[in-house]
Image (cartoon, rainbow over all chains, first blue to last red; front, side):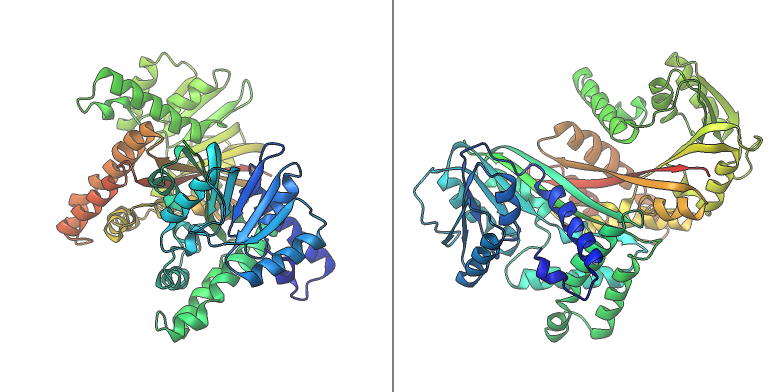
Length: 269
Length: 269
């Protein structure tokens, strides 16, 4: 999550709180995104560098090659990383299905929130495996929208979430891919596959997550697909709006919200 | 889970594995069901003693009063506990809404898989609070069927799970109560409420859980309500059977299954 997304007129104190919050989520996902000293690591699909800045800062002794298909995103990622003074990242333009690297040159490969967008995630994993050294570690992180549940429950809220799932499916992706990491990694030929779920459970005793996750991350993201979902006939405006209202309702003091990220670790044989 | 439920023609080795498995689940739920030495603990709704035997064995320095509304269950619980040589449990017949105890006499109260069956869980929690000393700890454990997701996904499987949810609702209970522990404990007047989710994530790398949880615990439980669900018109036989088939399908080598238990801790003010 970029800080810029949080500029919604919050006070500096609020901004600080939300930043702590973002850090809390980063910690849930990246607490074990650790690489040995002098590792040569490929980050596949870095986008604007949202994850790059976390993993690069966490592993100052490693060297990262971060690639993306979008030249525009790479430009922004470069700016972001430079502004943070991070120096162990090199950006390269590349297609994840046809990487411009020789076989077995990376010690580790990490890919976060990318497989969900791909038609053929196993093919991508096989290409990543090609450039990974024998015995090297593959790390994959994905969310799973179908893991979402909340209190008060609401069929409209589930329908709104499903709009995002449906749109992602129409673009050839899969918003419920988190639960599939185990079979995907096995299919791609990796060994010693271990998948570790990271549930983000939120109730009123965790106000930063109520604000930072239920409201500003998850519901804001679902809200963002409303126009397209209505335009393409996946839902009706009033139904979608009720769903969004019900999602925000879960952020009230008696509300509860749960979402699960999945992290897979595997070894190249 | 009673060992007797596992006698399905398994070899002794298989029985041992399943027993380890049951222990693994117990550990997920009860790893922190710990009470100080010489504590006087109320277990509310002990049934046939499935949880009693775990918590009593885990806390040999505490004294347990385990109550239930069913004389028959209490009789069986007594036998179970005696056969295990556990001596720190005393069974009493009691109604959870009208406990035969004076105010504020217990150091702790624990209630597992009981609130899901009650019309008015907050009223029960208030009665439990009445007999709890000031500063005493309340522990609540519940499952949540709505937290279930799996791969391959199947609407029939979800429909089969929903039959259990619907039947529980018709008897005045709530199979999705796990996610509500936070608001329920707050409503009942407890302070310092902390809810900790316990996700049981199962893939082929955890064969004991595939057998012990997906097949023999969860799917067997859902399968068990089929007849009633068809009889009461909640589902059609063929639809339910497809759902059960699809649940068993998630136990195949490329399948994944996830279910979340919730444990709430709270303090009486």
